[in-house]
Image 1: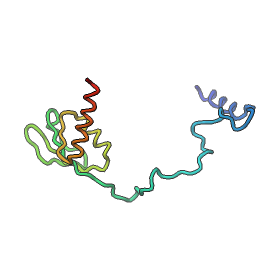
Image 2: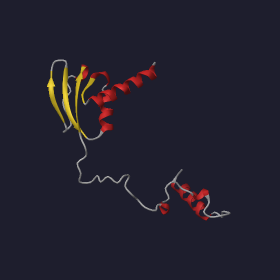
Image 3: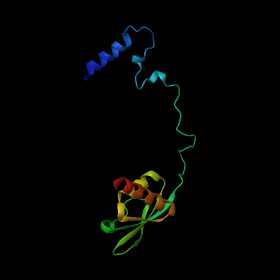
Image 4: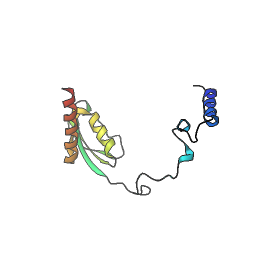
Length: 131
């Protein structure tokens, strides 16, 4: 739809003679005149605050054995000819989990144990869907 047709359609919605007003055809997805207030998603203040963090230690092997820490929160703990052990301090669980999952069988979570179990359970659910 080009610019002219969109404007024409909007004009016809505003000027059409409806049996009653407001009419459901006049509803638009983002009607700014219907917003009563804007509030934060939670009452937890997020500005000027330290988020809770978790220290995670993992071992990368196989094609990832030459991995070099790239993020400011990562540091190399141990390196051998078969693996590299990384310790990181994370404050964003979902992103960390996704990063670990993308490495597949080339990563092993050493600590915390709850994260290792969560990743293991996720891989089991994925494997069950493949069979």
